[in-house]
Image (cartoon, rainbow, N blue to C red):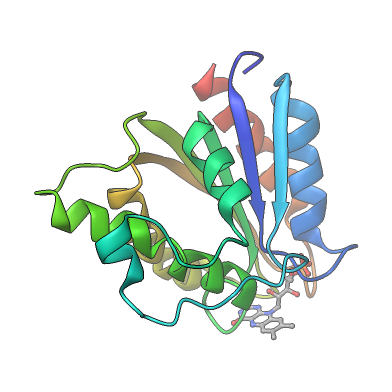
Length: 184
Ligand SMILES: Cc1cc2nc3c(=O)[nH]c(=O)nc-3n(C[C@H](O)[C@H](O)[C@H](O)COP(=O)(O)O)c2cc1C
């Protein structure tokens, strides 16, 4: 992973929660020379208001995410981390997903051509108070739409479930290590 540019998009709300723990675990163990973490909750991202500016201009009228979009387009490996909130991704992450709309409009306006030429790899880290498996299926489906227009291959997902009772941290860490190994 040393040569890979890694971007971690962190949708956690708690600074001392399990999502953050796993983000830190991945950051430490991926051993990349270039790791950027984008904390979606901290950034107060503007909502996509469906104005269709991006359809005409190939970029968003808001500039708050310009730096993130640059990192997103340059990354080789992207980890999306989220707590399961009401069976889906956290609100800040959902706001961010909606702001990826310029990639959708470009894709469909240009005969299904990707705006980002580089093929990238991604995986999902999810934490849930209870079983969380059904939620993870749903989250994967949500991300698949996004990945299809942002030139991303989903490598897999890591679930740290039962954080309300018996947190499955060790298993989640093992899965993160196995994803790192697969990326090579
Ligand atoms: C608003 C809210 C909604 C939640 N919804 C779910 C849920 O639908 N399913 C579930 O298993 N746990 C749910 N939980 C529990 C969290 O997923 C769990 O506490 C998780 O560890 C949070 O991530 P964190 O430790 O990084 O903060 C919810 C917690 C909150 C605060």
